Length: 344
Image (cartoon, rainbow, N blue to C red; front, side, top):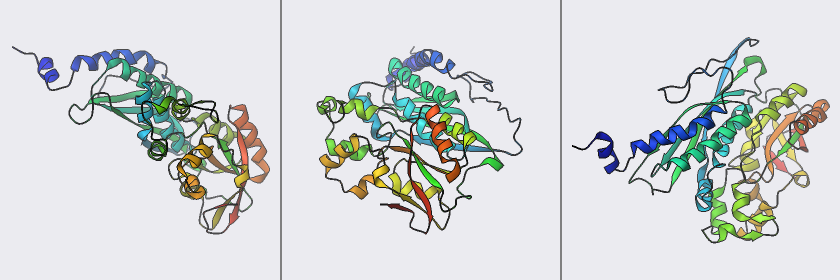
């Protein structure tokens, strides 16, 4: 008589592979344990008890996102140990824009077939992202979808919850004309616009390893560079300076993301010459014959965060970012008007 696991395996789902994946990922998850973690992985829910002492009105802030088609680059290179950093970054960088400190993270991996070593590599990246963000990985799910996606394919998404005292929420409501706009440098394309990137370069198994002098690396290496996680530097900058608004530059680039941090009647005036454009972007524009506006409306162009600070504390913010390992440059200023973003 066939066992349950044998029957399920015949349907395309290997239960024992799932058990093996959990065992392999435990050592990675252990790296993320911080005060507040109540339960280990394997339960029906991840338990976390936050320390809310010192907060008058704690507000929970949540964020969820995926990695998008950047996953295709990881699959082509058969390198899966950094893509999890991107999954964490896309969530925690959003949450910290409100001034919130991420507390914990959960991941979701859907795959055509559970290859335990590959799943463990993915989770290793998620764990590294959590370490960088200072939050705990308290749970997740790996789901096999035989017949719905090719065996080698997978998708990755995540979810985070952070906390901030209500009186310290950063929402742009205190913005004034004359406030300084800082750009915190990105590490590359991050995790947005990859459908266009792949189309422009016609990326496949052959040219993903093509070396470009402009990049000083192969195309695949450059594109797979993990998204920067800005949590700790932002929290340091908030302590050091008067931070009034923060925008995470993701899909939609400058034109769609920066207006999200502005209150009505305010415009972000940015000097294009001040943008620390990384080599991958002029290459993309040249190869794809992409109009400049479309570049700034799709990609981060070398700026992962745009941060608005009071003029008299701008240098303190720059210094705080530098001390935390990030480089921030002055991009422009906040002005009166309803134009959203003006690049000049």
